[in-house]
Image 1 (tube, one colour):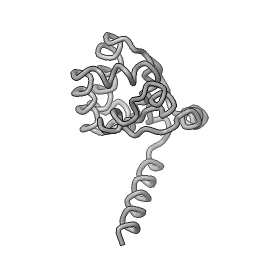
Image 2 (cartoon, rainbow, N blue to C red):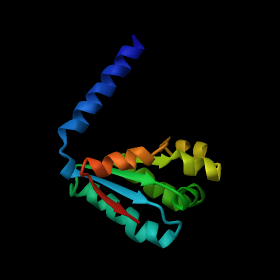
Image 3 (cartoon, rainbow, N blue to C red):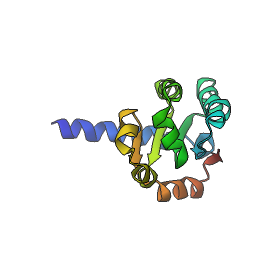
Image 4 (tube, one colour):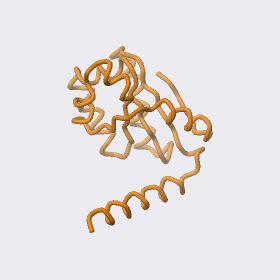
Length: 133
């Protein structure tokens, strides 16, 4: 019974995601390990874009040095939580997380950790808007 409820929730989520046109979806690829870039560019824009409805669907992809920075900085973690609370999807590259030995820490922050190379490629091929910091 639980499995069927889970499957239905997944289908509902998929239907909702498909209902949003790709030109209303933004993927923010955050790779920089620079804290100022995180606070003054990545997080400020991503948070405000979601809060103000500039994009209907926003995914923050944490990739490379940014993942390490995030696991070490409480202020960034608190800011991330605020973004998650307003609906920003957060994912991280498993390959990068494994290189830094931080996959568990990222998951504990509510971030989905998975291999993202092909996923990013699909986002680009689907004509989603992608910005990189």
